[in-house]
Image 1 (cartoon, rainbow, N blue to C red):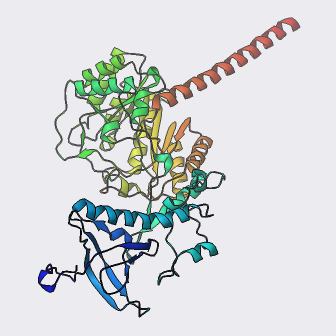
Image 2: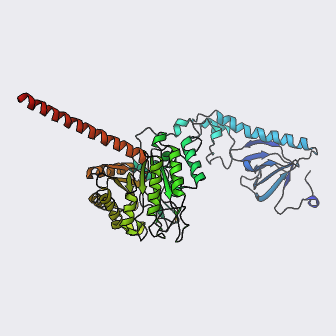
Image 3: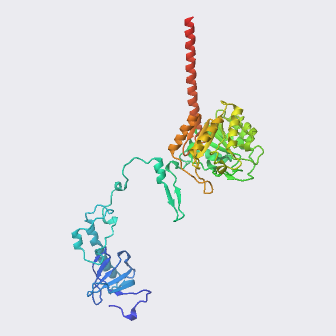
Length: 515
């Protein structure tokens, strides 16, 4: 029986008590026909996902209730709130079971019909057939399209979601697809996601025993590397090398704090860095002799707080290394020593094999990219003075240029010509990558095809060797590149000398026969 007004439960929203017996239902249109204990049958439109069986044995549902009288074809009453459909059976199990069975039958009937549908995929809707339309009861929502779910039909194969087979995108096309405008209207900005060619695997000590050994020795001897301090993406590849003898390490001398603040570098800066470690030359030589490397690069932070800029510390380290292992090839990547060429001479005469000093960028961008104490012409003077001290064939000079900072082709051409005027032997091109948001932003991600083009142009200008690529750095695979190039040059020289010797012998024999 329906409760009287005295027994009504106080609720913040309208409440209706009914004793339900579900006769039929159409979950697709969310309509149930319920035989209640009221004065007439009523159509109750119940949103199917909102119906649940409460622990008390009632079916609770939050919905907009539309009661359609048998004498009227339009909703006569609409209530919004919580409807409690209560059974007159006091036992909880006897309350829940009939309601659950009725709801299950009402939900299962349309699902069986949809399983036999001729539709192939849930993502391709098709108009309902005439037979299915006549079998379902008419309702106010019958004209609305039925929502489609993957669970109602067979799932499409994975091949349907794959793109058509076509040629791979070129680097320029891939670059265009990765450029997008983001931000609110009126303040949109163009960003470019990191291209695929700039992604490298994370180095792990477990996969590379040489990497783990170098890392442990660095910590034990309190040594620093530019690979770690500058966040180089090639640390795992260089420290591992193709084999043990070809591995390359870049030791950073004189601490990890620089007195200059270049806008592309992530090394720490300070006007008063810690004093030099007097044992660093010996520790460095000991570590390098223990590692069994074939090539090592020594670099340093700028130390404008020192009288000699750290030149004597640099030279002492090189001499210690040569004493421990004379066959080890040593490259020194130095600063400009504030333009003091006497300090440049001290390092050049220490016995190193390659003298490197980076111009970093083209001349027009130097004041904005590098610290104001460094200039393009000052760097050219350093490289030129090294050749004067050691001679043209006595030492190899090397420099590096970053691309992607906004330079033009004409500016790159001009920089290469200026470097050849001072007899620079090796040049490298690499992509500038922004270390943090406080540094210069990347103006352009240069494609691998463009890097290859500049490599060919550098070789055409007369450079002995050019390493060019998105991930190339000044010391990237320096040992492998240097060894390969030197061996090739030596083989060519031997072949030329052998051919010239054979020609001279033939001439001498011919002259003897004529006599």
